[in-house]
Length: 102
Image 1 (cartoon, rainbow, N blue to C red):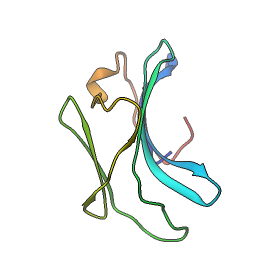
Image 2 (image 1 turned 60 degrees about the vertical axis):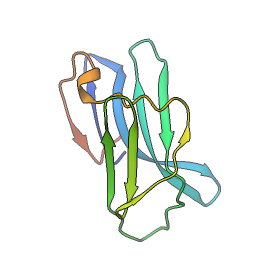
Image 3 (image 1 turned 30 degrees about the vertical axis):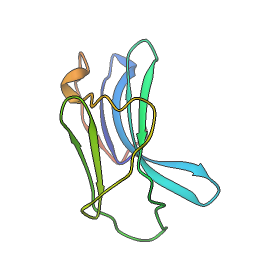
Image 4 (image 1 turned 30 degrees about the horizontal axis):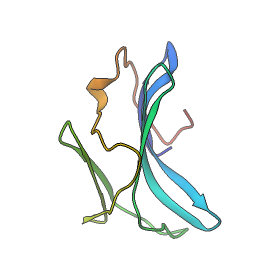
């Protein structure tokens, strides 16, 4: 996980920004927002990340849609519903973590 936030009392309700292994040697950036019920929304970038290379990753939300930028360039988004859910959409959120497993 690159970073994320959750309700620690309910580990099934969170927002995460992470690397996602699509297939062998294909890793992209992904945003996952999951409700306490277990239903989730995943939106992924389309650029394959290269090992041992630094990237600047930005995630923006208008409240209705995500925009992902990799090194300042907008990503083509792939995945489920792009609803733009953000930190305030997580009830009971009580932490923020950088670089740890959720």
